[in-house]
Length: 271
Length: 271
Image 1: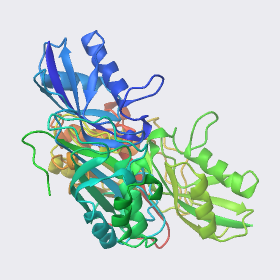
Image 2: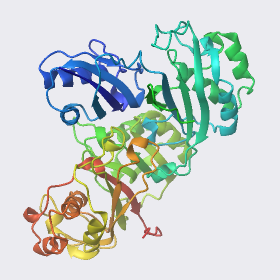
Image 3: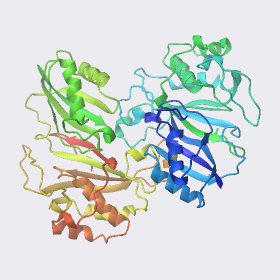
Image 4: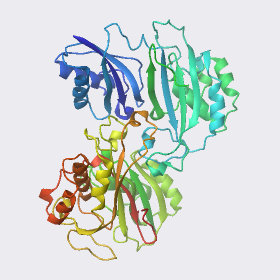
């Protein structure tokens, strides 16, 4: 019996989110099915964070504990990738102590959100929000910087209350979270698809101890209101202070969002 | 009544090819359905080239003749993109003379094929062949260069005989075609997905007056045999001279292939 830590990368387009649900195609469901086949026994996987329907991941972390697997972690990775569907990849598999818990032991999560104003592309359009109107990147950057620090993010939490979140580092109360990074930059549009070259490609990057439900997409929705000039940059501070989700913007669509990285003890945030 | 020339971009993953077929989801089928709704009458579209199941396009050209559309080409583009599914985009729509024919008037076609040895990615893996073994790019380049010029490509044509191909510039006989470009380079792996950064990303580029069925994928299959050292570089010349498809390699998978551009009078090949 061995326990493994898996780094999962997935295209969220065709998944009903990460968390298993009866009758739905989910990341956890596909992973547990594949593991179950390999080990000839029911396997439960635990995830570092829950991603919603349509949200992608580069570095989701999951554990599979006490597996009936006698070969190496590398062999498990190969066997898993031969069995998993094309839109879900085990990017890394390593052995881990039974005591490792991907959610409780996580110290921070990094999300990235891509926005490509006016882009018409069936390729990058799968992974970016493509609103029609142009966006002022420096206005978005200024507005994003206001959110850095420890705040009550109730105005950015769909579903009102915080998730029952905890970590070994402590349990934050309600809707208070700490944003270590809240930034925005234009990516060099050097994607190999030339259609994208003439377009602005904006990446919003947020790193926090943990996130409330739909928090990143609510933040991006609000930042784009500022970037498109419909709201004053000062509005973000007012919204934060108001602690009322009803005053916020519409939620940004899931397809632009990717869970980029989960940080554990010893991992360093890329500032 | 107006005629329009459309530039189509599509993710071929979920299409059964470009050409309409009963009971199948095809690019032509989706386009004609959208045009039919907008014009309230049955519309037939004509395509510059046929792409197989799973093959993508950046610059497929299609015409819709004698449409019941009184507004502008720009309005038609907006209305089409609001109606088309997410994996099919009208990247450009312009008016054209009734006499314009996207297949007969095309002077050349450019295809690109992406190969990323060992890449594990649900994102770029949709658009690239990811064989396990490494590939020697310069060996592929040397082998590819042998194919430039006018040759009998019977060894690279699945289905044996050439398609009933013709253009106003003349009708080539059987399996003889002219390759203007046959090259290969490594793309800077500056995709925004960092998982790809450590991987080699190879692009094979071919431009010809026209292509035989599965010709590009058969060429790529053979080039990769050389690039992985299973065949001597001289084998490509022997294969070309043999004019026998049975001597060739396995066909490369469709997901790596993109119809990049179709050239008409006045368009310049990018050498």
